Length: 72
Image 1 (cartoon, rainbow, N blue to C red):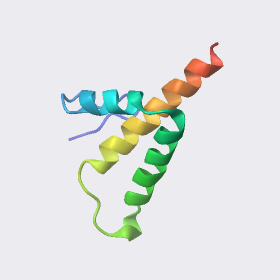
Image 2: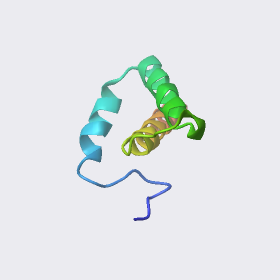
Image 3: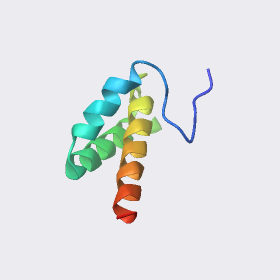
């Protein structure tokens, strides 16, 4: 299965995740993203299947917020 690069995953499971990420403050989102990035480290051993999707969605939410701040 190929994963979209520029867009988020359009699976039904991604929408509750997006809602949860949108509800986070900027500081919470940043800390959550850093924790996910550390969990995806190939030297850390096992990576849970949902972690890469969650990391991608967190990055997209961060970029969306940054773009919104710049357009003000």
